[in-house]
Image (cartoon, rainbow, N blue to C red):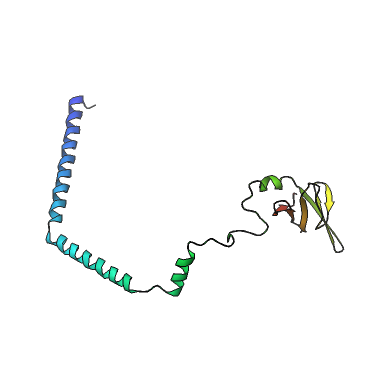
Length: 159
């Protein structure tokens, strides 16, 4: 094991090397800034900026670009992310889905019947829960509409 004096000497030596390296990088960076290339780079950069400014200022935007810019701040007529049959703003959509259990599907002749909460319903009939009615029946799911807040949600068949 290394004693405390040797350890201290190693740490001080490493610190001295780090300080010398730092001084070297600072001096080398100052030498690069004062080189003649720095002056050339500054003039090249200035000419690039003036050329770019002149080019951007002289070109007129297209009609499409003008249309996009004029419409950018206007309000949307409808939500492009809205999916029919689903109210995205409704927080209690999951709780409404939990009110109903689609347990079965019966098709006899041209008549479709869905078994929801142990009761038989046909499309267009009001459900036992007030304000809800059965909009559409398929073998895999039913579409239920809440007439109060005009939301529709799909209930898959529970197996």
